[in-house]
Length: 489
Image (tube, rainbow, N blue to C red):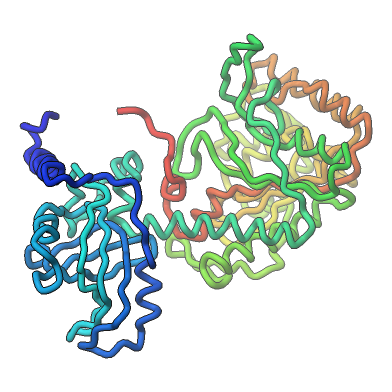
């Protein structure tokens, strides 16, 4: 759109040119602030109504409201809002000329003394004004805000300017991650970094993104999980407890709970099993909830959720039996497949017993698990990196934690037998050959690492984005990701 077709933008560009004609730079290099708005407010809480302080402050922020032809401006910075009073009694002619060229959305600097107005509002009597960034585009109209969801996600910078709820959500996400880190550091975990580019996509059953390295002339895969590299560090003895918080990438569909790139916490601890991971999951979620919400009784989507530990531990087969009356542990693979399809699973002839149990769970149980619960007894067929169950070889020592019908955590007693691991990878390769794009390929170097000896250990993966959704009562994963993946317009 040309300036002629956009009169509001053209008017702002005209003001920009008038500022330059006055010898002023509308985009200066810096502005020395003395304070943020919240600090000024806190320091002057006891300032009486109608009294002007002797203190002079220098503040900077964005103009989000203007009244009486700019006599009163609401200046917003990262800490909050403060009112600015612009009057000829305090501003010279040059400053008043600058005032006439200020629009809502401009970033400005203000210098002046603090006073409490007769109405009780803390205010800065401006004695100097500096335009720090002239906004050439108007913000959405104040009383309607930025309501279009797609525009909010595509232009997050505008969303954050005009929607305080969006700023609060993303700040709470930051608090959540900091709380997880602090708890793990205090528990003796070492934070590490592992590759984002993998020669073999592994650590999860998912379809990877593929890229190409020109210098090496090889295809590489954006990481789908850090698991296999983190366990290599345990083999090497870097530490007995390691964790990583970072991005993973999966070339799958989008939904209110799925984004192609997502943030996960993944950790491993030597000499413990998956039951220790249950306790740790509870501790991490509770610490995050306390940091973000102030407590462990939360509300999501109108449902009250009690995060008080310990959480129930129930097997997948047990939950399916309660919901359907079908005892999958008593069925062979064909009968389990038939039973799952009768529940609406839609499985093909090649689906194994474990896939049938998982499908029945997804169809009839998963979305009913509103309160926190650890679901145990996962099938071996769908868990190629988990240790076999001590009592039933069809199962593994694995759990997933569910809240509000979502999986938020996944944990194993880690498989550390290299011969068993190679056999599991071989079964996965057969599944790939049969057309399963998400089956895990054989990672020969990982098996070699296991042959040097991986201590018995527990491992946990926690989805940061879903946990952020839960603790901020956000209906979509896009609300808690600053820049979610979207189809280009």
